[in-house]
Image (tube, rainbow, N blue to C red):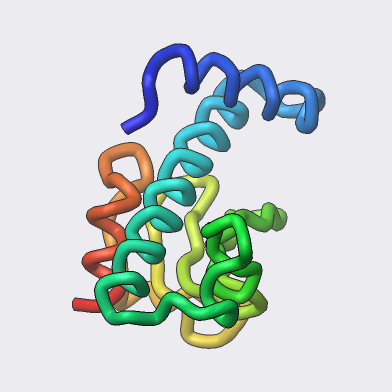
Length: 130
């Protein structure tokens, strides 16, 4: 979990980038950003535990390479949580529910992992491999 000071910095950074967001959308984006950071931490730990420590997985600073880093893409109805160029999760903006993906752009509503307001990155990472 991030500290209050880190959250305030993150909120200000996101506000600078996304000035046209409404307050609720900004808070949602910050929470999703926290989940993504948790996913990246868990993914790095998983790869290290499995002995995957070469330059394919980690750059020379010890961070995950782009192909193994989770990131957010915002679309009209969903936030997409992608790893590299592959889609992993879709978050419905209306309900906040997190779904798996059937094919890119199509949520698998039979695979609902919970709501982004009540789940952590670590919990979501565990559910991905369940």
